[in-house]
Image (tube, rainbow, N blue to C red; front, side):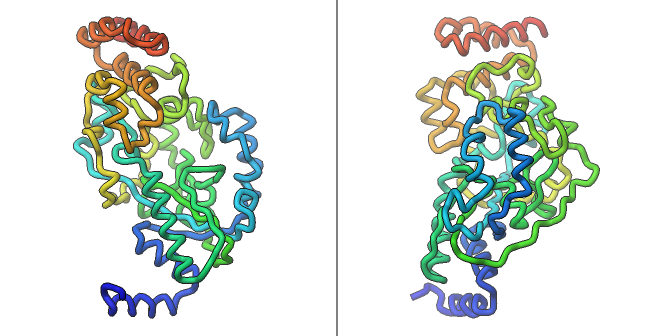
Length: 364
């Protein structure tokens, strides 16, 4: 028996007056998603844009982006008989010890992208999407489906935009007028025929704040990002030495970059997430660079267990932190520490230490 019979009966009565699509959206909101939208599988208008982006090599070392292109652009090839895509939005912005923009001015502190301050969202999102699909089946009977969250060849931002979740801004992130851009996306591919939502109008207007603020000029033109220049790509996806031309611009950003979102006017309306898993862990919202540098591999793996950061590994973590130390205000302690530890590091890290020491000495 339902724990609250009156509430249960009221919900069923409401569902009986809603269309199937609207009822599904209601179920999604009950499960904690802030927004649910539904779209078809026709992505033909994006075919030329995506293929050109790949041809220009803007995906860098993310070779997986160049594979299974037809499955990305045609969802029914990825999951046969897919008729509808249910898209969801899950907000992740949390209150922090310091204002993010102020944190970027503290060169002795580390900046970690807001989405990675807490636990890795993938497992939470996937589990909730699975529960969502099971609730739909419970209500409407068997359906073929598959859930995705930043996994497999899925153009999630394009699908979410078509489902009315938001519009793709000039920085390529999805934007919502009342909720900004601090949110994760997830999808359910299903063979269920549903009513589709209408894409919403683009409200970027003449604003170029995201383009102007980008430290490495990665937004090469409105709505087109060259990942090879993007600090998020360089500190997360790029696993080899970071090109010297971008190291100074990285500043104290040791994992990702949020500049384009921090300056976006629409993010004035973003609301804080109530998800406990997204709350900052291990002081990552106000942690010193030197503390990050001192983490051994075992300590890094232990502290970052359950975090998206763990996937880059200790060597890339150190690479990023060493660059940030090189960008810090001149400090004899930083130079002495890097020199003292030099022999114990891999050649990969020593390469970046050499640069960091030169930077420190050049600024002194």
